[in-house]
Image 1: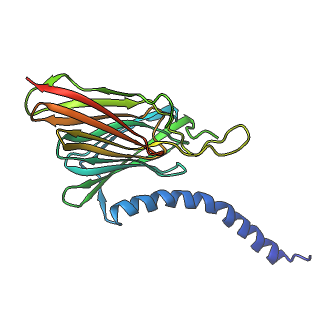
Image 2: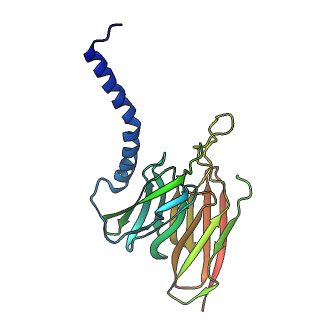
Image 3: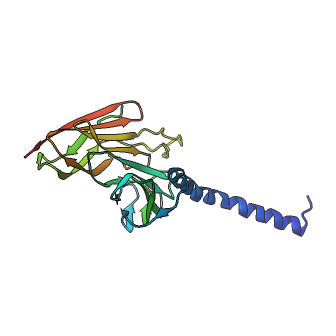
Length: 139
Length: 109
């Protein structure tokens, strides 16, 4: 097969583009999951607090907490995990405050995003970057 | 049903009427994520607890949907407002259909 200079260039660029696809697809998986929850609505940053450590030595048990007074439900997303959704808290009438905490798995260094749906239908969003030394997805 | 599943819940014995209390609950469970592989390279199937609910006297406190990214032995901390004495009912739902239940009574002083 005779490759002209132009063909070679096109092939090389195609290769680069193809190798970038998985990364882009993963980033958008988190965005898609967030958009599916908010319905594409605008999010504001005030009135929601996300507690996450700056550095987590072990990604198998990263303590995170959320607090969003007046929220109906709060969803936590891990943007770099194979499945971005982590946990959904739905608060009932007997809840004392709209806050909760748990321990989550993070596969690598990434942003953790909390999105709260408020009683009036608006959305609030907070995020934090967590550095992970040992990933928590096995493999 | 996963082995050795044991719920452990911490609720104060009593509270004042209208007081907001903190509840801590943990259940021993492997929470197999479905991402790991065994020695032969086969994917270990997902087996997690996918839902936790807490009710006080029939009124919902919190309803949590768990995904595979929740750690082994899922631990949750949340608050509840106690208006009258009664029972906290905790229910965990496993992927395999098992349901684990725990009840804690609270008195109003």
